Image (cartoon, rainbow, N blue to C red; front, side):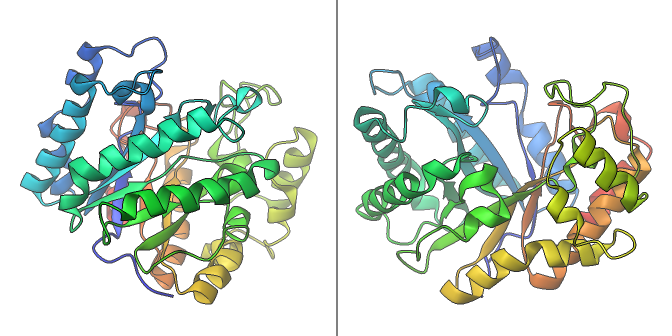
Length: 341
């Protein structure tokens, strides 16, 4: 398995150019993240940021481009270059698809939407592939349903070929179905070249990392559970509330530890060895409902496994979004969390 050179310890800038709800405004784009934030992250000793971008920040629904939106990606590229950080540009939402609106997805059947997607990525390559030593492209965030696996592989093939018409060496990152699950990597086809990276996201066990999430309907809003905690309680509550994968919890023998994540990563590692492709954990983290000390222990364990296998990663997330590292919730353990990223 090859390595994703130059990328090891990163953090997401969620909520800046993505997932803004009704607040897709120039005011937000200009103030939510500034150069001071990039300087701060570099000062933590991290080496990259992942910047989620929704298509409608930079592309209109008729396919034309929005220059004022591209300016903010320009800023991210410039600031990261100035402060010695690498950058993953992640398309978090595209025309006809958002991971949060899976029931309304038309992207996987719509040629016009797919044409827009390819057009956007070719434009991205024209603007930023010249920085291929420090900028990488992630095609699309969190494809969800099993039925999307085959069309997604076809779209990947087409889009990679279109980017390669412009750049042969820019790193192209993509994951599989199941919200970029570890299982999803097993359904990806062989990479087209040596500059492909497979990604997965890890929020396991879900009942801990998403405990009492306000967008989840199945679980009481006052529910709390600690990590590592009693595995029998995890199994009981995951089944009771239909919350996350109960099967994953069978990997735990006695108590949670980094061994849980080593076993969890095994299918993706097998794929990476088979195709000699690097792996990247593009998202992981725990909601700010979780006890801070528990979150520190969880991050310590998952990254012990990432370190063992040489998997770079980016914490979700820097600011707000219910997971923000710089929020008051994590103040008591923030410095220690940063040490373990």
